[in-house]
Image (cartoon, rainbow, N blue to C red; front, top):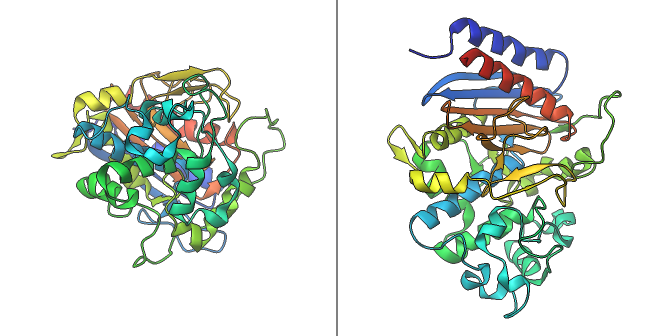
Length: 375
């Protein structure tokens, strides 16, 4: 018997619809798993300002919700004994740094916990080059840390995915987009999700819309800057077809909730095991925390490829438990797992709102509704 009563499902669906009615976004999806069972799978609105009706199969740009997919692909290689968290990156990728340099001491753990110091570089501002993997890798090899490795948590908005992706390629011999499909998407039946679009796929991705900030919301100087400008390149087919493992996952809320349901259940769902329970425990443990992230300027608690709950800015509920882990995507989407309550949650929209407050407020309303219904 489901722990979510039908009356509660109806009330959560009404809140989901209310967000559409008041214009928080044009279209959205909400999917929730409890105890390994999908208890909500909602879609509403339209795929863009002049778009078709949104369905549960509509694919969206997932922005940084992509990062956990790339991270779990790397964790699977750790599970297989192909590398270890405290290995130096240069041990697997010799061109990454010069011997005896400060950069040469950067570890896999530091990359995954956003403490490598390589939080951003010139490549972040060059969307014209994001589709050229070799050019991106060459840039990473020439970068120098902005902070001493291991000292300052600083969110790696784009570099995270390329660093993790090249590590996966060096260790496994397989490009990250194919390795993620092999080790994450295919085993879980996430048929509508990938890192970028493949050549044989139509570009049917929902249109993103950057909304202006609410008049009564003061900008606290947090985030990645002008969210509308940051989002703009992600409406182009060239970016949709690139491989940007930190930002251009293409997928659905239903697939993402399934992913988090698996992780909430120690790495196994319906007979498909992505990771050992031991690796899930290690990758979701707190690795670094700060009151002022070196990129975003706000508090953060980092695991290995995931953000932990327990802060005022965590998008996992108004008072999110510290045990919860997941990731948000540029003021549009969020996914998370609560291992104690065995919840996998995903809310995906095509409306990009300021990520420092507006987005957190709307996603927390739905997270709170789910939590209250399960009490």
